[in-house]
Length: 452
Ligand code: UGA
Image (cartoon, rainbow, N blue to C red; front, side):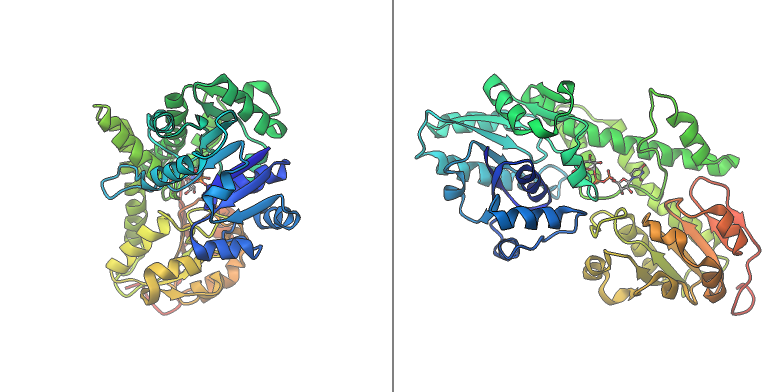
């Protein structure tokens, strides 16, 4: 089919590239001249495993093209995706200005087209309930074109977005037109393995499904993080709880890993938006509010524990931070735990040395020379008073810990992702503090003399 994707940011680029990969002809529209040039030079502007290769493959064959011209891009389109950003406004509500501008531009561009051909406009951006219905009315009022609007929320995870697109748990399509549902079913045909995984529903249900999915996942994480407080108090192990409840098929094992808080461009934004959406519906959601409060507190609790167990004043202490991205396999630092943790540490007078396998360049834009940037984790730890591990990069768990212990001022690790092996920590002489798990309390041997 002939598809146009308005917006070549993260969601738009993954969607467009994957649609090209399943055989559609795709035109991506990008207004940012720098990003457009990168795309037209055949380069992928974001880091996402497998995306650059697919993008280049289909760009070379012409199956995937990029332009900044909406009018020409929609001329032959049967399906037009709107995949522009809906960032949070300062008041926490969703900023709809990009989507409104894109909708208007598409509406104007469709005005000259033959009204006999139906065009399906697909809202991929995450938008509050009621948006798609308003957009449909807008097209009806402003244009003679035969347009059916559908909501098609995305459930892609950074780091596995290509796989999530090619093997979706489900495809959700909200709307009112059976014809548009049929077109969407045909569009996604190659990736729909079972009919029941293609879900059609009303616009508002689809819109709310997106927020509900992210809030539910964030709630599971916050609940487990809340449980770590009890685990630490009673000497229980959050990993045992995770297995103990995750094996109940009604609960399931996913998204129950405790840590120093969730981050990223989606959970924090969408949970905050859901709170505002609830308020706009006249409901003060204590539950949705609590998901966020627990998440904020978890980052602070992590630093409080570090300060308490450090064995010397935090002021003037050197702390090596391992991991800056909001999760492994991405260079994305948006709302990452490291942003808060580093800020708390700096505010308390610590000297911070930071390392990440992909995200250091992005984090440099935030902390500049307030932080010492280290090329590898072993060097970052040398001479430090503690390591704070904040991202679950698998590489961190296989480092030469005996060597690291020997070069640190005191061998002390605070594991904010529970991803190091306790036995290794014990055997290599570390004082080790995971989250919600019993600590390994080897006697600290200070390199530079006695504890302060
Ligand atoms: C999330 C959702 O998982 C996707 O389904 C959704 O499409 C996407 O948001 C979006 O709305 O665009 P993403 O933000 O890429 O995807 O990352 P996740 O893998 O969900 O992780 C989010 C955060 O939760 C990370 O900071 C991660 O470290 C944390 N997390 C995840 C935990 O703390 N514990 C867990 O058990 C799982």
